[in-house]
Length: 124
Image (spheres, rainbow, N blue to C red):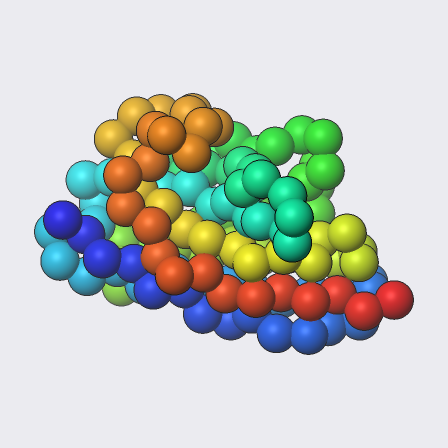
């Protein structure tokens, strides 16, 4: 199976930006569609967005992401990115990347491999 490790989290002021990375190792990274999720304290893990195996298509959660977050990938480097702009305190959460063989799936159950997560804290 593919193994995933997230990085790039940290503390940023409201309105700022962060780019999260998810590095893959093991099986062929380009075989999988990739997703980003986040989990705030006391809340369920929620879908942020997903990118297909080629990187040609993305789908984001529309309710809170809108145009602020962008997902991309570099299959040669085996990395998927989550670029986050105009960050808000409510974006504070642990962010996870995950792999799936299905396309545009938003349920945690559809993803079979997860990273350990990276903490993002947005101060007001």
